[in-house]
Image (cartoon, rainbow, N blue to C red; front, side, top):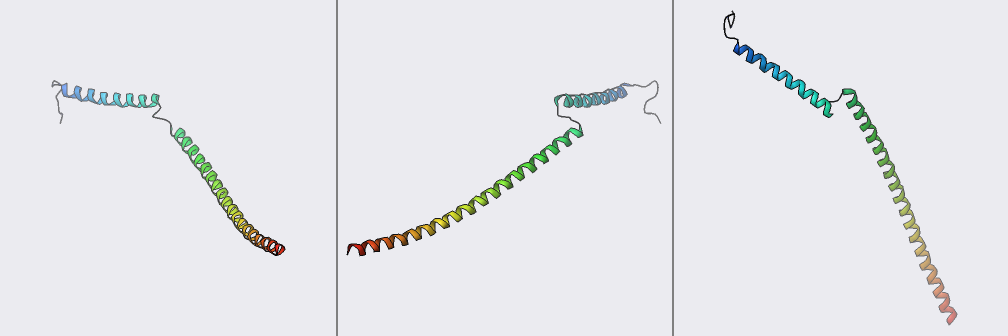
Length: 108
């Protein structure tokens, strides 16, 4: 069963074919435009960029961990120094009391 006879009107067929050709030409033009503007790149390029990003994130994470360890070490050192300073202050207070007592006895 034919939709149109040989002697029939081919206008709908021509319109349909021109519509399909227009859609295909638009799709090809869009693809070429995307390619030339840099929005459409090969998969290998995308994979390379992703690998570079993973490596950089790994480097940043290692650097962060190094700084974190440095800060923890520094805080431990500061706590040790504060403890030593407290001990020295208490020893100096005792030494001051001894010297004050000696001076008071010497004055009598």
